[in-house]
Length: 400
Ligand code: HEM
Image (tube, rainbow, N blue to C red; front, side, top):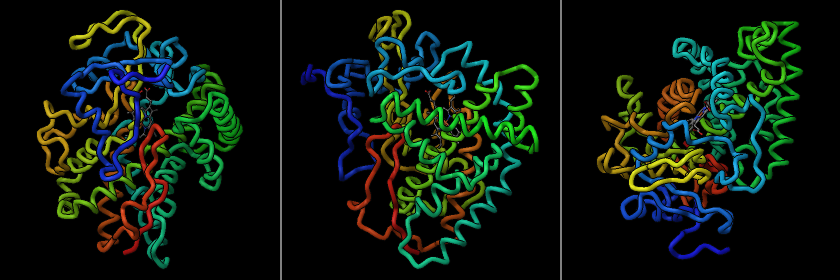
């Protein structure tokens, strides 16, 4: 069934002239029809699109909206999407979700993440020094934006960075909206198999890392070996694809607003500046997806049990009822931390303390070390990732 004009097809496409702004149609809908149906999979599904910040919080904060993609009516981009194993707990509801998440909460406590600051600064410094030795133009994604979070998550988990080609290749299937359920299952199995082997290694030679501590939880009978492997596989993927794209898109955004770079370099201001970049860019652009398990009133609409909901974070994070002049980047914005770029409710990003610390260290350091950094090609030649849950650029040629 093709989509009718009154039910627009869900799209991630952005205008070529404004690739860092959300699709304009959704911005219009936020005023004219803040809860409206969109057509998905050529009209097979017509989930609700939620474009207001307040409604988005109402949905994400209500446990009667399920994250299980195997429910009939779940607004999946690809048919046949199944629920992953318990270790991929983002697609489970409580209590399974809460049990699995609890095994990791200590790992992401602010104190523990703060202890990583010197290591993150050292890795940033080494990568930027190596890049600065090269003759420009060089690909900023390949030489910096991707390896940095990859090195950091490897350090945290205790995974050898030498294996990065293997896990980066498999991680891509979890963000690729065109990937089939089979491709995702295969990628998940490959990653979990790799981590099952690593759990054995950590038992023999323990380290001060997450995989070692998960092995201890297995030995204590708290979780199964399979859970430990998929939990760490999930972190390995989640720690890569998000922060890497955020570093690249923040760099582009800052170069486009270079008059605001001094704000970022001010140590007392950097945390606020990073929140504004998170809000303005909102890299998880595929939309958070939920399915109602009972009839629920949101705004003026009753969402019926079994109906799907899509929340495009880039659109809700530019709601003028919450953020004044929402389309402008304002690194001084007082309330930018109210953004929903890390989600909201029980599934709110577990890795956010790490993502924040990485961005707060990395972004000022890039501009301190390379004050003349420039994009080496016209913006039209940069290819943006349209078919992925997480927005980003495929590559970013730069000079300095
Ligand atoms: C700028 C970087 C990041 C952004 C914007 C981001 C965004 C998000 C969002 C929006 C969600 C909620 C998904 C939902 O409600 O369905 C989420 C969940 C999650 N994120 Fe992140 N993330 C980032 C970095 C990270 C990092 C570095 C890690 C781990 C090392 C991580 C681990 C997770 C996990 C485990 C969940 C699932 C939480 C749950 O279901 O309880 N994220 N993230």
